[in-house]
Length: 227
Image (cartoon, rainbow, N blue to C red; front, side, top):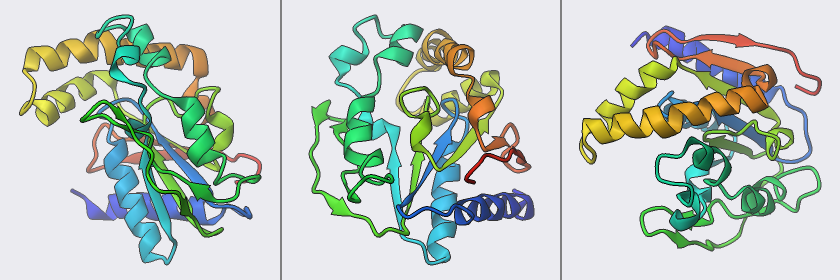
C-alpha cells in the first residue's frame, strides 16, 4: 500500500473534521456501498483524530438494525427490503445523533441492536465532551431521514462490481461464493441503485473518496456552507 497517498487522504479528512466550528460534538458520516471500504476508512480516521487529541465516539449502522423478521419481511433478497426495512433511523436519531447535535445534551447510546443474537440492546448512556467527534460508518447515511444530521459527509465510492469480489473474499469463510454473490447481486447492489436514484448521495457528500484501488485512493471535495 502506498502509505503516502493513504496518509494524505487521512490528513485531508482530519483537516475537514477540524475545520468544523460547532458547539456540540462533530458528527461525521462515512457512507458508501457494502464492501466499499467504509469501516476501514472510518477506523483509520478515528485513529488519526485520537492521535490529534480528539475524543472519538466510534459507531456503525450495523448496531441500528431492525429485528430480523422486520428486515426480511419482503424476502431475504429483496432490494426494496434492504433499503426501506433494514435500519432503525428513529432510534439512531433519538439515542445518538440528536443527543450529539446542536439541541442535544450529549448523553448518548452507541447501539440499540445486537445482530449476532437478533436482540434489542440498551447499553449505558455515556456523556460526550462538546469537542468530541462521532465517526459513524454505514450504508444509506445521506438519505432524507439522516442527511441533515451530519456535520461532515464522506462518501466512499467504489465500482459496484468490485464490491462483489471483495465480499466473496471477506465472507468466504462463513458463506459460499454463490450465496454471497446472490446477496450482492439481488439485494445489495440493486438497493444501492435505488439509493442513488432517490437520494443522490454523491451530490450531498462533502468529500468523495474513490476507493476502487485502496492503495491509491483519489478524493474530491466540495464546499458546503458551514464546513
